[in-house]
Image (cartoon, rainbow, N blue to C red; front, top):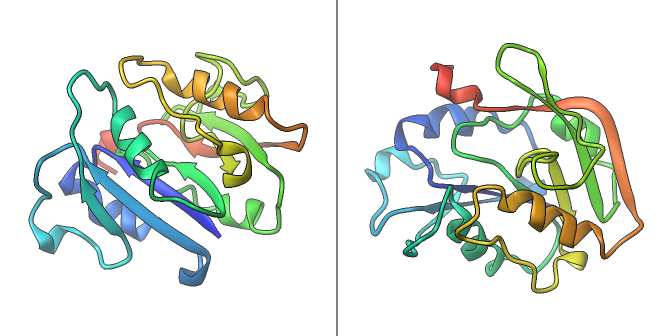
Length: 182
């Protein structure tokens, strides 16, 4: 089971995000946490997700929303997917048989240039949507809500709890894909 979360979802992008999910329905759980006190119009929320609203003063780039989603997860692998990024069409095919505690892969810019290789876990070397973690190593890890680069700290903390790390030397994430109107 892959649990993927999305934070600060922009309502006009929900249909594009929903259409990008090519994972069998019994193999994933989609948690959407809006950085809002109320969700957008219900006709913009797909039926294949569960949604929540949560705000926290001082939170940057959806970190409080990611932490809120982490409190809802009790099993499986966790993939953080930002509001402006689709699920890569080849992601499921590349991860579906993996059981590793920590999985990373490369990420491109929208123009096709390499943004992050994914083989280094450190701040500014990994992004929230080019790694997947097992709930087994999550423990009490949380994103630093005030830190823009909190995904690097979070990934490093989680990866330090396991030697079962698998790097897929392939681009399986495209940064800011939906910001260009795709």
